[in-house]
Length: 277
Image (tube, rainbow, N blue to C red; front, side, top):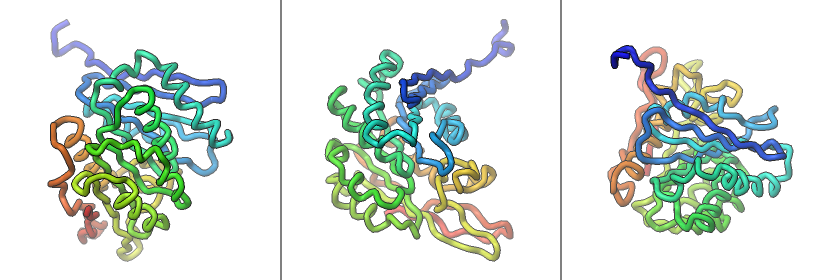
């Protein structure tokens, strides 16, 4: 066929499932570039697991950028320790499909209580692959995560690991989260940043970025609607970190913008920006 008539390559997906219905999805881009993103989703009320369909726009965004995405879907009904124990077995089961974990630049993105799996994966990476992630992004932590945030998994960070924490201004986990990012992470100051999304109302409108996951447009998760996604700072901030740590030799997060525009309200009034310290 002439070049203009050829069907462009499409992304592909592989899946591994254990006997407890936990699943590992490997999404491979059509035109891969450097970097793997490991994603641990939040728990969604009323469901037994959070499948990748909840994060489809975000996953597609990463695939279009040439990133390989590893996505963990776990069964909420299982005891926590049994769920976490499933992750190493699924990774081993995936075998050659994840060989890039040994050599490719790597980022871990955890949403809400997905931080537990992020910790577990970090431990597995050090123990089985003898390496640390290049970047770690934690989005809008749930309350009650003090012990998890101070788990030994985060002590396994290499000092060159970049860490981006993202939360709403009125998050009920704000103090714990900020203390962790500032102290417990033990990372140099230039390697860690917190992005804070404003809690704001304008007439009958309310900024939705602090409700649920702004990585996911599904109303079932309580976040912003899909037509608001182009105005959300989270995607751009995470992209900035990924490009900084996966695509270049930049040693830290210095130079990260201090403000991230969130667009305007329906009447054209500018929204307050998200801010990073």
